[in-house]
Image 1: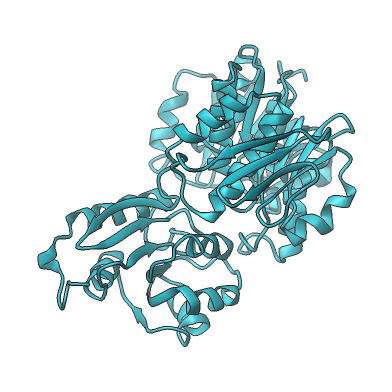
Image 2: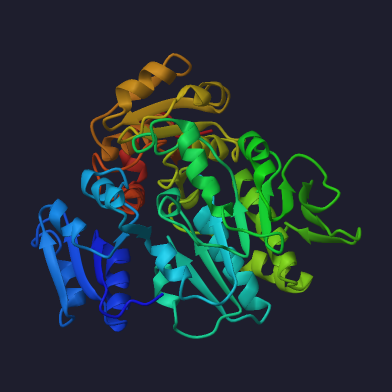
Length: 458
């Protein structure tokens, strides 16, 4: 792809936009950046591109700027449906995502990881397994460094990338050698009019795969099973519930991998620190992928036992007075919360709520009634959550996360779990899920027995 002298518009600055701008500047493109935020709001990002020959248009998106471009590269947070992008496409101007730009300059095999939940954990764990196996690996995409940061910068055995549905909207040639689809549940319905459109965006990861490529698929996911018949790549499955003739599956205390010739490898979970049924699914997908990459059994076992998990994903915070506190701030949709609730046998006090993403909270009702002893709701979505779930268990609405944590501790007993798993985004009260999770941990770590009323004994 020839970039020198080409007029390229980068839509959205932030982390991905910075990587794209630097790459384009290195390739002598004529770069313009547009962002609806002001220069003051973008000051930290603008400082990252100081000294580059880059034009900026901030505080607005002018249609004329879009129409005067040869190529438009869109950051993940920008919907392709906005008027200036629609006008540019109608004029025949190519509009692509950052991963599409990157893939045109990457000659190494790409492992793309997508799905509603578990992408980051799976991406990083695959990278760890490959590294323990002696491979040279780049790990990035929607986690860590953008994919564009490895384009044309060295030779890799594998490029492992977390990929979101937003990024997949803007692909034309992007082709992972191995594409993982972990699961599909309702999410981002504030961006997609219907669940089907969200699922179709996810499935674009298989769009350009060939018969020599691999698709690693969740055999237990109904949507994936229905949609996978159109995939041209070789299909490799993993399952939490059923033994497979070929693929990775769960059996009591182990992960089992059976190859096409019938050879079986067993990976024991006794020393694996990751907790949660969803993480068993994640690890099954990792095993299947690692075996496609010919990783030795010993390397896979070592990586599984060394991986401590990621912050804000069913993260143990502390135990106080017999009550365990877990931070699952990354649980921003119903499917994720269901898996988190299934991971505990203890009585749960669930703190949920935040900014509503337009999904259906109904699927939570049964498991909340079964596993949750008390529900504490926060944020803009609390009334809607209370209407959907409040009748199933005792429910309290609070104004702040701090109040919710104190209420939860006050109403807990020895042996209970207090779980923050919001089923909503964080943007009504926090900058992102990380800020929300860190604030939760800060509050929990400041608790002491004196904060708590009532009987503290078992």
